[in-house]
Length: 485
Image (cartoon, rainbow, N blue to C red):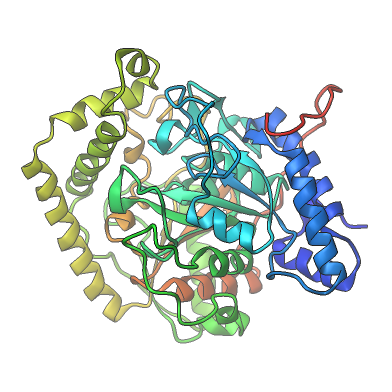
């Protein structure tokens, strides 16, 4: 039998429907992979063996009666440890958040997953409060890359990306305030979508404000569409959520590669000024060339962005202010325990004035207006997701780069948090070291279905995807982790 841990959510649903395997069997296979992902790359903060097995048994019975709750009923899923999950601590990578509180609420996206019958396997690692583009924290340590464990998985949803890549559940919920689902997706060779802001309800509201999105992290665009159909359900706790989608995102993928024909695509290889590693540039260019061969109308043109220095400074004002806010009421002991980089940016954020903040909002609004006009001419914008492949884990920036902050090596991602546009990363090749390379698709606001359709078309046409990482070796024999430890 095919290893159930290697199947997508859509493939698992088909297997369940045919009676060829059960959610109980799939969950057992995924739990084994989850333990390996925890021991080899530190992808998990907890794995809930007992809870997952109980949920899987209930889903197995529903499939036996041919009464599944949804297309993802019985499919194993993981949750980034930024999002609330009832019954388990949500410490957000921080020792300042006590584990002993009463954890009685699900975040909206987690609640929708639970209602759909998904099997919640465990919670995945994040940097402290999701503040940076790599995944390490004083509480949980550093998360490694499935293709090279000594390198970073990216962040801040690095645990989720590593879990999906290693077969520890085909579905994961991540968050993205400046690239945090797309960065690790690119480094780990998976698919991830940052939906239009408000498409997926969020509660509690992020301290980073309307930069922060919840998004699906999966093996391919079809699974992301299935997951988005589930998690975009309304929730009254989010005052800024969008109205319900008018149709199914999964159904919007029908047509395969033909859906690319006639698309007006803007290809910006450097956003005018970014230095991109040659292997990354070549892989993205090959994928764009195939888009043209499939019938897309491709122009090499840069979007109307101001200088990256201006954009980065505006983003820093908003981001660092959020860091100051999330830690505002910490006592001296809590502050002393913070990630040193987070402690540094919170101090800077606390010094900004209201006028500084509003000036950054002005930059954001002007950029959003400019991109709105740009997308009247182009259906999609294509860029590299990142200009580099994964570097050493445990550091914020590549060693020897001369950079100070993670935003300096992520110039393709955070601008589209400022504009709240949907943006996806899909794998389009590997470098000479075997590390994945990501291609980014950006759509106009509310253009989530168009981004998913184009990504799915690339996958069907054989343009997107990389070989899965080799399964990690089993660790030394130890008793299995039980419950939510």
